[in-house]
Image 1 (cartoon, rainbow, N blue to C red):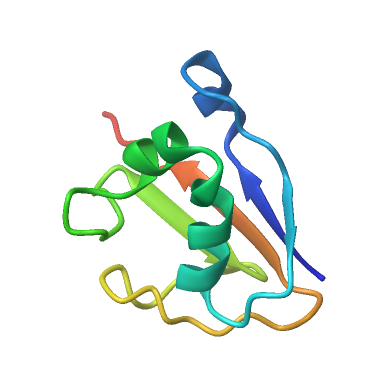
Image 2 (image 1 turned 135 degrees about the horizontal axis):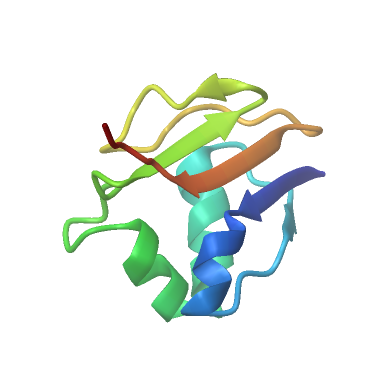
Length: 89
């Protein structure tokens, strides 16, 4: 099953479990993770259901391509990491 992991920084604000899923798209995996934890969803997605600007998702080491539909494909053994994008100078 695909594994969905959230950045440890979110633990300061909300429970962030590791999710094992049979979902075939990023959207379906995130929906599964947020179904029991809507507060986590509010940190990751905006009001339209798109990734927030300060969030980045990597699937099998590659940045997700679609920040709106979130229809990037997941393989049965995909590793998904949801983290905060950092910037600075």
